[in-house]
Every structure is written in structure tokens, then in C-alpha cells.
Image (cartoon, rainbow, N blue to C red):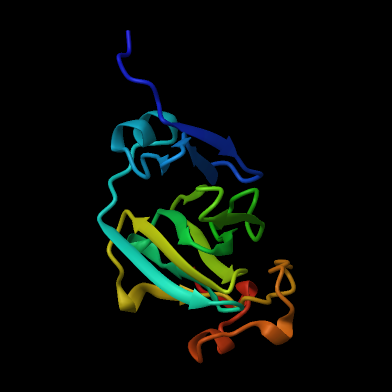
Length: 187
């Protein structure tokens, strides 16, 4: 008999392995409380994983970061969440031979919905800020390696992501302005 209750709800997406994690939020007149991470609950409800690095970024409206990935033995699973603002978070399947290769899942993550997105290894990831400002946090199960860095064009027509932000308002880094199309990358 289990003496604990799992404090998360897991919502499947259209791509197996990519899931939305909804924590149980307890609120009252003082505010709210929730467990933003529990190794025990995640292992039981989603899959066993050991995260080794936490990252955080702050961006303004229209900033689009991605679509990034790590190659080979440096591939990363990620658990993503927003602590301030709203973003559209996107995972693109880049696993050769996968039935969903080139398909994507997009989910709005916000400080209000407290949702998290789990992306297993083998996906490119990106997000765009929908609010005036956003603070974005994520865990990875492998360390970043500059030599293993890869990226796909955010506007690859073969993928066809609706970023929910007009193209004229998209703000990219110099590096993300010239990422190759999915069909042109070496995986």
C-alpha cells in the first residue's frame, strides 16, 4: 500500500513520451503552494530520469529561442516551466525513423497554469514569449556541450509551427537567424 499520493497529473500529447505535467496546486487566501519537482512522483508517473542541470532565462515579448538540440551522446531530456509570464513551448521530434519525425507539440506554459512540459531525448526545443516578459526555467538530464550543439530554423515550412506571434514581432539571436532546415541537418 502506498503511503503517499502522487502530486502531479500527467497529460499525454500527440507524440508519445512528450507529456504535460500538471502539479496539484493548493490555494487559499494566503496564495498557493505546489511541489514544482518531486523525483519520486516523476519517476512513478512519467519515467525514471536524473536531472543534472537547471537553467533559467528572462526574455521580453516576441523573443523566440530555438529550435535547439544537443547531438549524439549529449542529447538532453528537459522538464520546462514558466515562473513569470507566458510562453508557447515547442518540441519537434528529430529522432530518425520515428513515426512522428518532423512533427511537433506546442503547449502554453504560464505562471498561472503552472504546467510543465517534459521532452525526452531526441527532440529540438524552442519557445516564444507571449507576455510582456517571461522567466523560463528548465531541468536537463545531461550537461550542455558546445560542440554537440544543433539547431533548426524556427520557421521551417516543412514543420509549420504557428508561434502565435506575428513574424514582424519575432526577436531572434544572430545565431538563430541562420539555422538550417530540418531536411539539411546532420543528426
